[in-house]
Length: 226
Image (tube, rainbow, N blue to C red; front, side, top):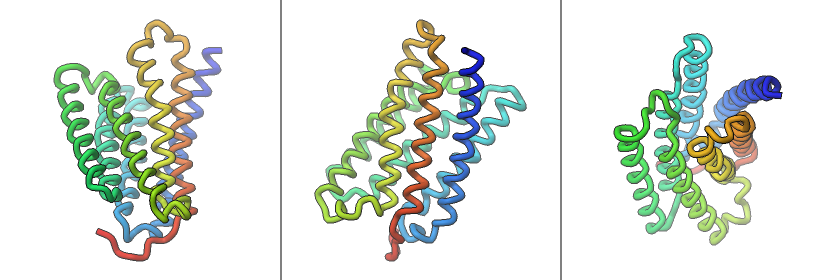
């Protein structure tokens, strides 16, 4: 059973990588739709994710070294970039201020955690990951609240950021239990860890499929945006 789970996990890892590459390629094909919006930087972010995954895979599989530092740096960039995206698209000043506080709090805690608590070369960042996920969930709720209280609600499924938000929201809601399990219950329930890995990889699949749907189904942004 364990051998089956190990093989299944490796298969999902490969599928996840292929889906990430597919999302970046489709994002490039449909770049004309959002090149005039702030989301043009999202394409750069997607390709960074792909390159980071390939480097991490090479280091782990070929060089057989720890690659956690690359994923920890990715998480730091991931949260700060997404906070910047929502700060740009949110309209209410109150929400924008809160997102700035979230960004600063996350960045400070990430740095202090790396100095005093967790070694980012040998441990996957945990507590800052949970904090960042909670902050991001709240931020996305702000975005949905603004959409539901505007005319955009009639066409919300035609906005790229809507689909990005759906994917990111589902991923972060699902990943928090995985992080808590990994941090506090791993030694007690180590036999179930492969199932939890399958959960996290499945969440990554959902995330990237949501991106792909957004690229294909979204409106083209005509007006030049800063």
